[in-house]
Amino acid sequence: MALANRPAYLGQDPWVVPFDGDLLLVQSAAGDGRIVVRRFPDLDHLHDYEETVIWAPADGDHTRELWAPELHPIAGRWYVYYAASDGDNENHRAYVLEADHPLGPYRELGRVRDPGHDTWAIDLTVLDHEGRLYAIWSGWEHDGDGFPQNLYIAPMSDPATISGERHLLSAPEYDWERSVAPINEGPQVVRNPGRDRLFVAYSADASWTVAYKLGLLEWTGGDVCDRRSWRKAPAPILTGGGHGCVVEAGGRQHLVYHRKLGTEPGWDDREIRVAPLSWDAAGYPRVD
Image 1 (cartoon, one colour):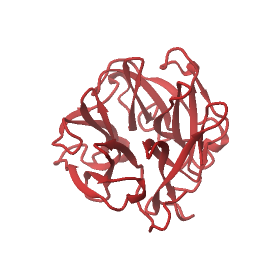
Image 2 (image 1 turned 90 degrees about the vertical axis):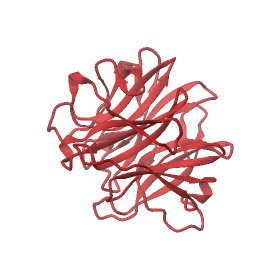
Image 3 (image 1 turned 45 degrees about the horizontal axis):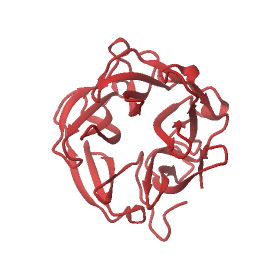
């Protein structure tokens, strides 16, 4: 559902985490190459925020097209993962910042990559599973591919270092994942605490159209880096929007995501929305 009785909150790729009784939304500031954190009291007051610029990169090969930052507390420190380029989309890679406090100051730790497959990479997130960290991101199989965009997973030795080869986690195979463009991106870890179930929700199809939607992978046991350990849902769990996160607030879980408002292709008319997340009788997430 949209936020009731409030104007459209234009934005994209929202990532929200709780902190010290408030909520923090990390965003890339459109057009000026900054990453900001917006602090607000609850999901009913997304508009009533205090903004802190946490990163304004200097000149370099990854100072433009900053996409989809995520803010993660890991082992007592805070990490911001984001994608950036030199202005050429084909050069997008994943990078990470580190700080002792979510509002900074941040230190740049550099690129997060599998050296054996240093190809286009965006939307990196982190999975903490059974005491180990894993990176999950959207990428190309080879340089210059363009499409398809697949999901990959790799082990990490620390929050800034991939320590093993990447493995294919998901490729756009169903018609609904590729009706406009064959894309899997925006992975997000979703847990059902009552059932001890692990899922990865992801965005599918073309983000610049209303065909965007959320798909779901379920871990069925075994090595999380083995694609055979995951089951893909045959239908999306949300249509018309995607690329967000799940946050617990007000005593329940919510999906915070963006939805495109118009039918003309483009990225300038995306609105951040909030919807309650519940669980069906079989333990699968359901967007209410």
